[in-house]
Amino acid sequence: MKIDRTGNTTRNLKWGIISNIIALLMPFATRTILLRTLGSEYLGLSSLFTSILQVLNLAELGLSSAIIYGLYKPIAEDDTKTICAYLHFYRNAYRIIGLIITACGLVLLPFVPKLIKGSVPQDINIYWLYLLYLANTAISYFLFAYKSTLLLAHHRTDIQSNIAICVNVFKYIVQILALLLVKNYYAFIIALPICTIINNLITSFVTDRKFPKYRCKGKLPDEKSKQIFTHIKGLVITKMCAVLRDSADSIIISAFLGLNDVTMYSNYFYILSSVHAFMTVVTGSMRAGIGNSIVKESKDKNYTDLKKFTFFYSCIGVVCAACLLCLYQPFMRLWAGESLTYPFLSMILFVVYFYLLCSMDIRNVYIEASGLWWQFRTRAIIETIMNLVLNIILGMYFGINGIMIATLFTFFLINIVYGTKVLIKHAFPENNIGDYFKLFGWNTLCTVITCVSCYIICIVLPLNENLLVIAVKAIIAVLVSVGLYSLLNVKNPYLKDASNLARSIFKIRRRP
Image 1 (cartoon, rainbow, N blue to C red):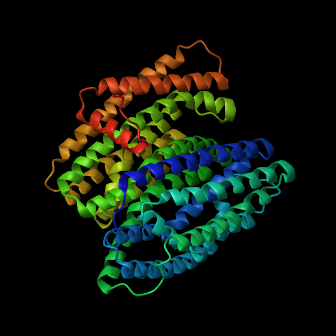
Image 2 (cartoon, rainbow, N blue to C red):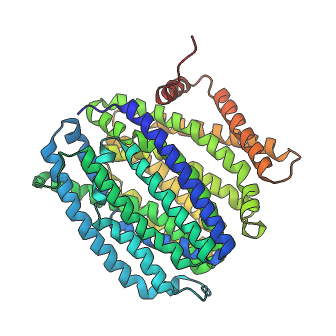
């Protein structure tokens, strides 16, 4: 089957951006109303239970990515029989995973109070609340969640985005009404499992209509099943570090510092992850196309594309990083208040973390598209252990700054440096790894110069902090970062490639 990479990427980007705008603005409004109506402790509970369930979700990590990777070749060859066998395997595996998550979640139930320092709101039964979050996580595995892989592997994430837009708007409206009219936290939370059910049922219906020839039947050959399990083992280990890195931070903060500090951290991390989600719309839109390219194109062509896409992505990242640096503190003071605003140094650490995350997004797409999860198992184990140990030690002595420094140190040393070497060694063995690190170093230097310049311009403005001022600073950060980053890279050959790629994606024509 021939996949229109550019056309699908354009469509995926458009609807992905709209979906992420809703996923940014609606939860922001919901968090604000929750903070104003019920208080920061309720928001802290929400962040804590979300982190706990993310850890439990480690049982799934790897399966969906392994299945999508396995589907690239049969889709390219239009091998319906193999695709149906993959779906059958995936459905059965998801039912087993749902049972595992439910069982592990129930085992963890008696220990939930020990993860919270201090008291909880008097009207909250943390056991019932935890069970609601557990139900929201587990129920998806029993209701056709496996069918979404067909959309992802066929490069049609735009369909998934459209469904998410409708369901999320409904969910957030229900949650906001529950907070304003009932002011009951249970009514607020019950919307989560209800909307998860609705989302899965709609996805199942749409997928059956879009791909009627695919049904759950047949059996994969033993060789393919064995390959999937190898990928899954590598993926569980590899992606475990990413989940534990973010979720463990909230759990450790809750255990050492309390729910109010969890709220502060979750507020900052919410803004960071929301902006990062906008950027990952790009990688999500490109993922299936890159997977198709890995199957059909040469290693030299794909290595050149890796560097080209990395630079293109960094052009977007520097604008986002500059906006975060200039707007984080005034926005937090305006939104959450001075008491829930971190000092300047802590904010800087969040911006650095954002940049490091973004800098590896394109690289991670090539890791997934090349199916190199098993080769990354050592890196993941070392990063996970080092991050947890340093989080606990530095968190005890330096609080939130210690936890962030521990995360940054392990991410840079193990994930970026060591992880990139593994990718180049196995996926592009005949290419020079130094070229990639030179590009990363140069992008980092340009990002630092650009962000510092934007911040200096913004702080010298004699303006008070309000929405209008924040908007003015945002415009300055965008314009200055785009102009300065382009000027610094005027002789970079990848700048022209990035410009042409942007034109092809957004269908911008040159003036005659």
